[in-house]
Every structure is written in structure tokens, then in C-alpha cells.
Amino acid sequence: MQDQLRTRYELHQVQSGSMPWQQSKGKQVLWIGCSDSDYDELETLGLQPDQVLEYRNLGNMVTDDLSCRATLGYALEQLKIREIVVCGHYGCHIVQGSPNPGLPEPWSKNLDVVRSQHTHRLDQVSGQERDRTMVELNILGQVQNLSQAQNHEVKVFGLVYDRASKTGYQITEAAC
Amino acid sequence: MQDQLRTRYELHQVQSGSMPWQQSKGKQVLWIGCSDSDYDELETLGLQPDQVLEYRNLGNMVTDDLSCRATLGYALEQLKIREIVVCGHYGCHIVQGSPNPGLPEPWSKNLDVVRSQHTHRLDQVSGQERDRTMVELNILGQVQNLSQAQNHEVKVFGLVYDRASKTGYQITEAAC
Image 1 (cartoon, rainbow over the protein chains, first blue to last red):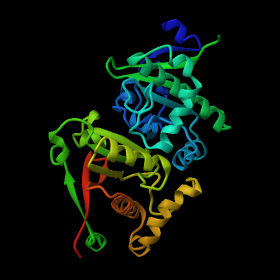
Image 2: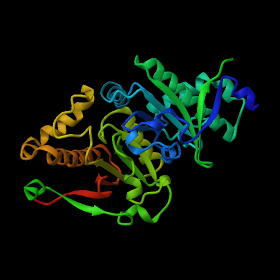
Image 3: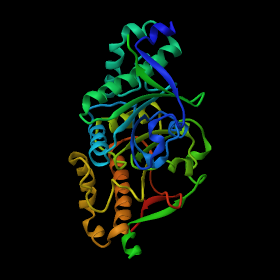
Image 4: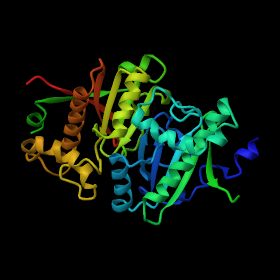
């Protein structure tokens, strides 16, 4: 089952020191994270506070929202940042396999889009595994949104964080 | 000069243990912080990761932006959070005494509004003191925006963080 689910993307464990931003100082990473996260992902991944411009919203979404566009514009044009991380996390109360009725509707539609794109895949799993899969698919979806939304030569990393084990994984699309 | 500037608001140092959220567990604080911050304010103030729903944008703004409205809605309606912190920080590259030409225009207008409301006060100071005053005035402005934007019985705290000394201050409006 696990293999079937992950044929189109792969997870690779990342550690402090294994990402390209470890070697230099100054704000070089735009971090798009989740409001519901426990915010120790950066520490675990070895990022120093002054290396990061941090944008957090419900579900680490890349949207056409003004605050998101302004943050991207400032990061790319002014700070010349060329590395962007979209980081979700397992155990998220916002990004779940099934719609969260507590989310305001205009915003929950962003997640509905991801969910509807992967109905077949999500329907193959249930419970916690379904939630975890949705977290991963959402990260991939936001990475794709980013790639479409900007014209700069930036590297976009999709990461998922597992607080229980204090472990981060990079999600990459895999050749079919 | 310092007294003249601060006749309408006061700064009181806060420490881990001096804020009301220290005694209980679970997400009880909506934290509206700045993308440019060094994100150790929460630790310094004694907040645990799972106590906080964290929203960060450029300049810790409370706007009519969809992501901000959605976060407020989720925090108040779903999580029943009744304590909101707006936290800015000295040394901010986004919130400054003079307009930052690197900010995308639609977003920079949010700060222009605060700046224009306090032209007289800001014109009395210059350099770093002007920047620090603008950080404080912006926090107060966002606290006021919040108070106007929601009907729930919430406590809104305006905090400013000084990373150089790892010190936080609560900003409160003072009787004239």
C-alpha cells in the first residue's frame, strides 16, 4: 500500500547540515509554514533565525492572497532570496484527509482543491495514514503553485516535519 | 523626549511567567508575528509550542486579507482562543520610520496608514529611535485594528521584542 501511494513522490530524510543553506549567513530562505505547527522544525533542520523570512498561515498555503504575494515579492525582489521551503507537518489539525468543518469556507477551498485532485489516492487510505498523505500532497501542491507563480530562478523545497520523531523529510516528485 | 513620545502609551517589561497564558496547556494564544522576526520571542516569553496558533506576515499586520481573516475566524470560532498577541520587534527591516521602498506597494500602504496617523510624533525623532517608535506605533495600530475587527470577548496584547537584550515589553495605551 505504501509503495502504491508514493509512486509519484518520494520522501528523503533531511537533517541539520544536509540542506544547501547551512553554509552561509543572512536571510536566504523564505519559509512558508503552518500556523498550527509547533515551530521547532527550523531548529531541527539547523536553520538559524536570521537565515529565514518566515511566512505562516493556515495549512502552509501558497495562494493569490495579498499577504502571500507581498511576502513572495519582498523575498525575491528585495532580499534576493532564491530558496523557498514549503513545510507542512504530520498531525496537522488544519490539513487533514477529510475537510475540517472548523475552517472558514473561503480558505478551506484551497485545501478542497488539493483534495479533489487526489480523490482516488486519498480514498485508498484511511485514518491517520489518510491525514499524513493529505499533508504530503498539500505540500507538493503548494510547491507546484509556487513554481507556477514566480519567474525567478528559485529552488523550491517541499518538506514535511514529524514532531513525534523530530524528523524532517524532503518530498520530491518521482519519475513514474 | 522619551517622555513626550510615550505619554499615550507605556512599555512594561514582560517575562516568562508574567503573562496569563503560562498556567494552562493547549492552543490558547493566537500569535500574530512578523516574518522578519527571529522567532525566539515565544521561547523568551515562556510560551510552549502547543500553546500557540502562529500567524506571521510582513510587519505583523492585522488586515482584511483573506489569510488573516481566516486565521482569526479559525482561532476564535473553532479553537475558542480568547487571547491574541500582536508582537513586533525592534530592528525590523519591514516596519521602519520611513517607507521601505522594497515592500510591494499594496502591502506597504498598510504601514503608510500607521505612519500618516502619527506624522507629528515620528517627526520628533530620527534614526533608530524613529524606527523603534514606528515599531511600537504599528503594534498599537494593529491591536486597535483587532479590537475593531472582532466581536468576541478576547484579550489583545501588544508586545514588542528586543532581541539584542532578549527582552519583551507589553505596550499599553496610557491615560492622557
